[in-house]
Image (cartoon, rainbow, N blue to C red):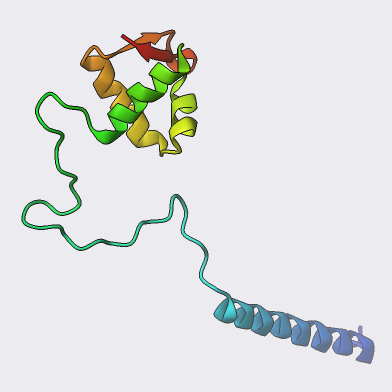
Length: 127
């Protein structure tokens, strides 16, 4: 059998050139692309420490007092005149889920909130 025909050689050169062009185009596109956005919540800009003490910590609530978020939760539940889910409270306060759930946990353990239902069906009202 004879070697590859002119057509086969031309096809081979074409595919080799095409593959190389695609590699170069992909490398150029990657080099010019913007970095991928970070996953999760965007981080807040770092604030300068307010004074001595631990950086990034908020001052603790006064003895026997609630944090501002806890007070807002209590006022929201009082205004609702019924029970609300944690998500309802979060949406009404326009606050992040983590701090709201932590404040609810603290208020429950202090006996200031009552929980009706369990897990996803949990609703909260003032004690």
